Image 1 (tube, rainbow, N blue to C red):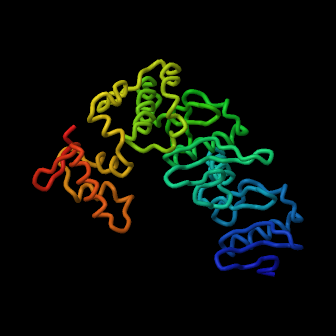
Image 2 (tube, rainbow, N blue to C red):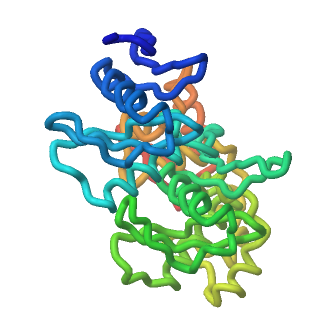
Image 3 (cartoon, one colour):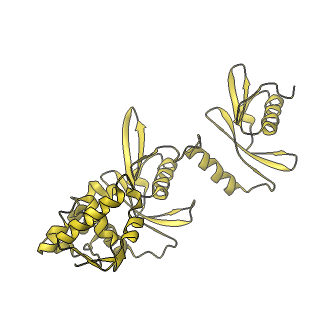
Length: 308
């Protein structure tokens, strides 16, 4: 009965008995071994151990959604910590999707969304997938309670520390660090500077869009002032040149930001490659001409430099 109860698909094998699916694995040998285990245990999934030895290999198993899932195979039996990580990883992404459960991507922003009692709740917006995964994993481990977050949390998946702040029921990651020696004031200043740059069009951080009108409140709560080495936000639009900069179109701002020191046209193209489309070069050239006309940029030989 080498293949009884086993249905072979193009890239996987499914174990089925009486129209019930008991497991789905990639390899036929693994399917036969798990099928034989189920038969020996009268198809009782509750008897499934976390580790099952098959000749020279250790199979790591878990039961999820009333099915056996094969999480990995090892030559040496893994420890409890490693098995626990495998099980957590599976629960967060049982379908092996690109981002796992509860994370979607909208343009360049990662959004954590979950349906609770029939209503959709958004828990946060992020510019980095690692931050979205960390917050999603923490929430899953703490029953989706945002009040469980501390000021600084350790991410045991990446061995990094993250400074976290819950604002209006949304979870924000203010910074990520390789060790626990964190300068909180500097982290707050850099976070506030990002919000300010986004507000005044000096940079694009769409994941911080909801905070554009909260800068003063956050300065008071963090007990710091917004600081940036290049911009004075307190006098954001006092000079005529500043006022021009704050009214640039998003693409003009991107071209302006791409110029650092003496910058060639090819350098600008490389920095803006994510915007590449039809007429990409002519669009850059046109916007450079507009920046020159506005008195923000000048061309010297084959290079562009900022006047400001």
